[in-house]
Length: 99
Image (cartoon, rainbow, N blue to C red; front, side, top):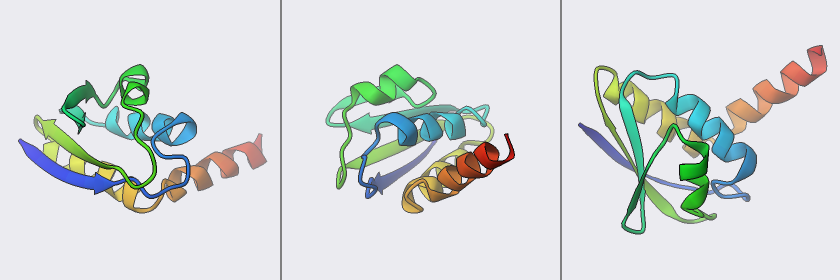
């Protein structure tokens, strides 16, 4: 089991587009991934679950993964959080420009 804390620093918190990017990243892995926040645990691959946590800017969440690629899952998810979801925002803009 791989566990790591991450602080949400982007303006929107873990809502709307950032939450969508978050679950897209979690779904790239075979491991089971959870998000712990304020004594609640939800499936990190569930948009409704993640949104239900109401994680705002400055809140710290715990990313927990268990499975064959647990280390990579946690590292990748923490990386997009640490980068303020910028990589995904850029990919979204690039795909809109080519459409």
